[in-house]
Length: 102
Image (cartoon, rainbow, N blue to C red; front, side, top):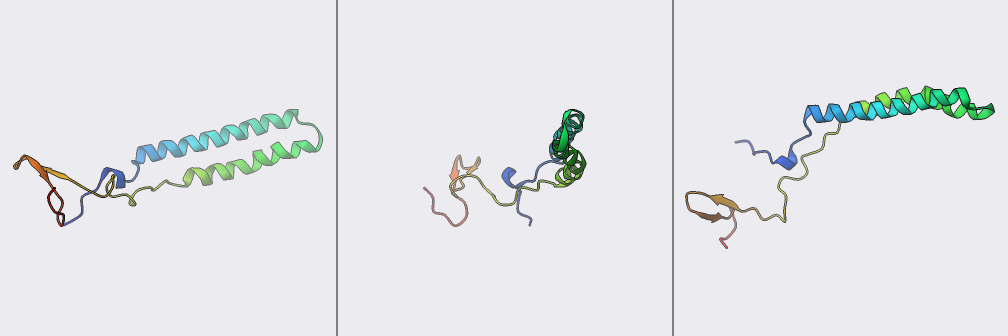
């Protein structure tokens, strides 16, 4: 029988993951837009800094946006390791298998 999933061990929902990746992409492309505008107002050799940013940031934006956050699987149950189940039929707390009653 399969082990039930705890809320803390479930991965992020696809909608939340997609939203986070779209936000990272939008922020990076916003910085690129600032670099492009800065190219028109930057004199001399300083022009290279925003120009390099405008050229390199699309690649960085795509790589950062395509990294999926697959958290989960490390924590099965929150707390200090003591899990107490409640059995409504008995009206009292039932300790997990292998532990003595309190």
